[in-house]
Image (cartoon, one colour):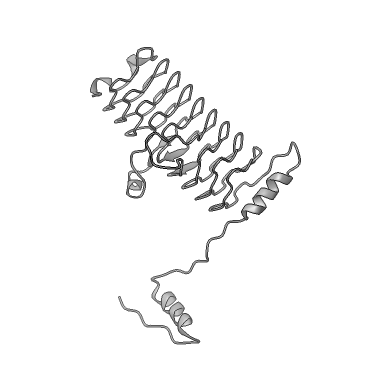
Length: 267
């Protein structure tokens, strides 16, 4: 539908502005800017008194270069780290509840013992290159990721002893598959001793993953690729493995195997 062009007021740019507003076909938005600069974040962290906890909760720190920083177990609840470079950063023990780390660079980032409950980690940059043998050094060892949403390539990432109860590995909604890869890669990921109660790992690539002594009670592994995965000592009470590929997987000492669902349908 055509719309009437705005009157020429004081030049071409005002005319274009009036046309956009009058037509209703475009909206004006200010250029995005983070709440703080990288220098301000660094200064706050380094000047925090000994024994205190830096608080950056709900700040927009998207797109900043914060690589190599020690966050000193800061409060980072609700922080927007979209596209932020956290290469080699120390976030161990930090509180990142409901934080957004989508598209963040997490190469060698230490998130061990951190609380990422309800956090979003969609397609972060975890590797320096795309070689299959590459390992990122990213660690969630002992971290809390209850209800977190993860998607992307996490091959070889350390989730040992982490609490991943009700976490979603992949899109939360089928409609998201248009923009988000429906299958994520967790080949050789380490879930040793992790808590995966009610977690959704369906349809993902988990070849050679380590689930030794992990608790997979009522986890969803439908259609997952589990060739060579190690389930020694893992709790499989009510786990759904319908259609999962289990070639060469080690289930010999897995616990509650008789209550697992769909094993008869596995290739």
